[in-house]
Length: 222
Image 1: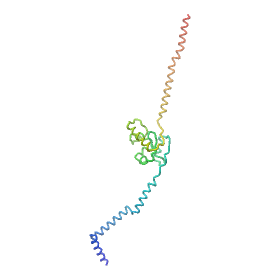
Image 2: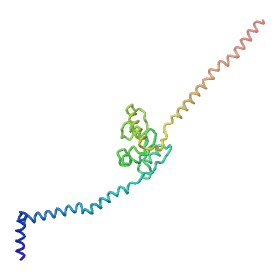
Image 3: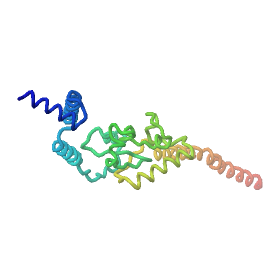
Image 4: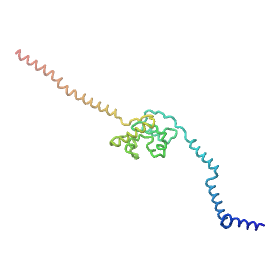
């Protein structure tokens, strides 16, 4: 009975598929193997939809709204270094021409690992003007810059003014006003020291004039 069923099955396979029984079962086995392999890689449709929804929710849960910018007033270069992005609880700051801006919204560019991370926490005016990534240019010194470099820096400043909020200024480390005061004081001292020498002869000339007049009067009486 079983033998007759097997013979009937082989004949049916040949009639309906045009393949020999061995070829038919080989193709069937390969199809099943391929199906299980694809299923193991991608999972079922329900699992795939669920994992996709979980992945889509993950960024939404991780992204948190940025705190409002905090006005810092005037700070030093050393204090500005504390806002280079290494401490996530602090805003990400950067300065151009002594003006400090909150660039926290562009952390992917200026934060740790970003292409401009070395500018964060510093006055990068010179580096931006020269488009330099060298450590020696990470400062606010603009001496020796050419016209095109200053124009490039001006473009950067306009961009920051329009996009980011100013939160403070960098305290200048060059005592320009003190130097001018000292120079004026020294110049005044030189003028004061020169005055007695000029006034001296005029004071001594008065007794000589009086003595000459007295001698002339005595001669006339004689």
